[in-house]
Length: 110
Length: 114
Image (cartoon, rainbow over all chains, first blue to last red; front, side):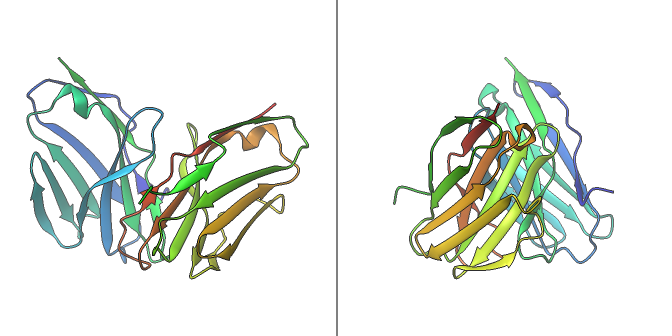
C-alpha cells in the first residue's frame, strides 16, 4: 500500500464549477497535511496546509481533513482554466520529510 | 531572495558517465531535500539534510547515488555511473525548521541518460 494515494485523473470540470480532489494516507500518526500545485514543466508550489480535523478555507480553496478516515481533500470553488494543473497531496509521516502522492491532474474546461 | 537555485536545468549524458547536480537553498533555510520525479513513481524523497547533516537517506536508490552538503548554502547530488533508468526530473527543496511542510522547490534538473 502506498503511503499517500491519489486518483491520477484527469479530473475534468467546467469553468465555474467546484473541483474536488481527494487523498488518503496510510500512517495514522501523520500530523501535517499539504496540497501543492504543479503546472506542467514547473516545480510544485504550496497552496494549502492543514493540521487539525475539519475545514480550512483560503480564498477559493478549502482543505478538509478527517484523521479518523485518514482522508484529506481539496475543494476549488469557481474553477478557472488557470487552475488546470496537477495537485499533489503531501503528508508528514514522521520521517521528518514530506511524502507526496502521485498527484491528480485537473483540467478546467472554458 | 532568488529562491532555491538548481543547476544545470537540463543534462543529457551517456550511460556510464558521472552526473553532478547542484543546489543552493534559500538563505536561512536549514533543511534541504532532494526529490526525484518520474511519471511512473511520482515525487520520491531521495535524501534530507538538516543543518548540513544527512538525516534520512533511505530513499537513495543505490550506491551509485551520493549527496553532500559541505555548507549551508550548497549541496550536490552525484550519480556515478549513470544509467538510463536514472532519467527523471531532480528537484532540490529547502525549508525553515524540519516539520513546517512549506517546502520551497527549485526549478529542477531534467536528466536524460542515453
